[in-house]
Image (cartoon, rainbow, N blue to C red; front, side, top):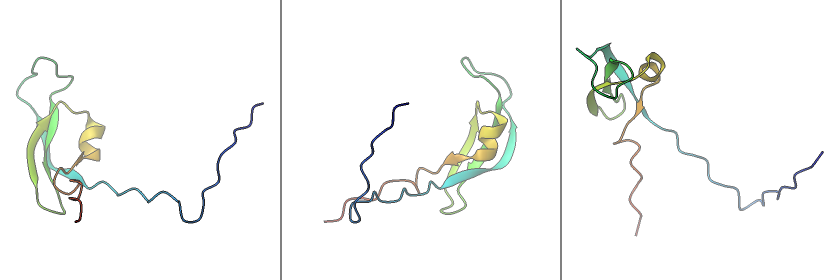
Length: 84
């Protein structure tokens, strides 16, 4: 059995914690009137961010679990501009 050798983290060099993603959740769920070419499903939802209020509108071609999980908010998850 091969043992891996890892470098221990030095006290001042620990990686910074990851920022949490802000997700938009579905206000309303439904189905598109028909399938577009290349779509897997006609299911989708109307997504709104609860933090900033951004509306993505209706997004389709999603599974049930993708609709329940939500989609990342492009406004809240925008990386901060570098400080000068």
